[in-house]
Image 1: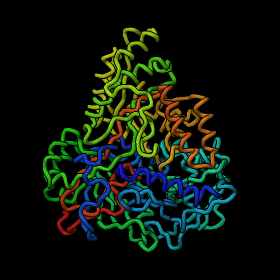
Image 2: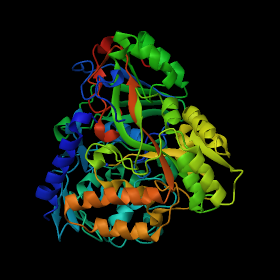
Image 3: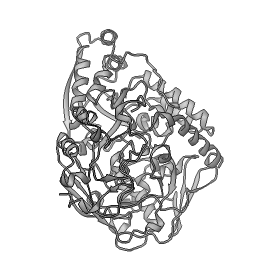
Image 4: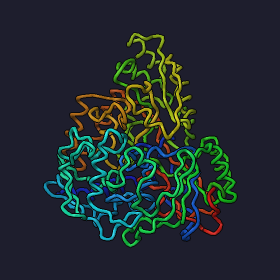
Length: 583
């Protein structure tokens, strides 16, 4: 998000909630804030390439497969962006606009943003007429209800858990396979869906942007195999999906643009080529030859490629660098030794050299050192320096905590990171090593990263990951990352420090019950510092999302509500005839 617009956006959100609703923001991609004059951020908030022409093949060059495309399991920000813009629609979505306008909600499957009643404990949505799946069959309210219910299935872990947190009577529910439905989701007719919540939730329309609120017809249910072939309600459908190699999307002939003011669906085909080396992707897009001129990068520009881009005006002009608004953290397993001891957790907090981590992540051109848990927009524009620890760490203080914990010579531990973040893990390893904390690095393919660290029995003591608010509210950050009641043995998402603290959970419940938005915002900010003092994690950096584009790309911008990822709703080609076949 552009630094100049953060405060205005927070104020606009507060006004929207106070005037429009209150009276009645996922994981980061597994792969920043900054000075507005920074050369890497010169393109922030604008569209690159002009207006696209209809047709041609858009190619996406990727070093990984998707974590999940099943809407019941899709909660990685890049996957959500791609799937909800191209493959399936949700009750509500974000406008396809750069800058702060991208934080504005727009009706999608629903006719409006929902109607609250019963003190915002009941929300009613009416579906538009003429909505169809890829085979021409009608999309119904019952299909949305079915996907909400299947998101509770233990066979489909890892997805957004707003339904589990807020729906009345959801405790202990395990999905439709057990032979019962959720009584708190009602469908009085094919076009009406009603949600009964256990407590007031004025921000509920923001939750319905998430893939949980996409339709899945029961007739298409394939359990875990649905991940490989979601049934399209969006502008494209899957023609081919060879896991870890290739995904080909072609037009869904039954998608009606008259019902969809957001998605433009410019390309005839979208081809995602997977399994490429990250540096190979950078070099191909820098050269922008042949079909690569009509290609975009799935993941961020590698730090070592930055000089090749920033020193060439023509290439730099094709670089998007929107803030991710995601806080990357070193998260410690607080539920077992050694990190059940707060003194050892504090030792890690003080030993970590966040500047070294930032350098490994691309340097100050592509991010900033984090000084709090929540990103800057949730503090009105600037993170507070809560603990006052030097950015390079304080090794002496770290060793004091080690001595207090009876480990003056340090201890050994292991960190898990996606393969693309090995350089970051080495920075963590070296900085903690200065205090005597010996770190072994384990790398995991990015597409399997969240499943790996979501297994709480077998995961390592340390993981490096982050969190992005699903919308600009502390309620979409702190409860998801630090509420111990949400921890699952498998498919654990969000609370990767496995932090269970009674006082913290009591505070979360108290703040969630507040009806005054400004009071709640202030309370979340205060709780941020209280949690950080208990040291379940070390906030490291706030990264921007540097994404390189081919020369034939048009209509491209980093969407602020999707962590700075390309908005696939509006991207296309300048000259479709020259796009090749994407192979």
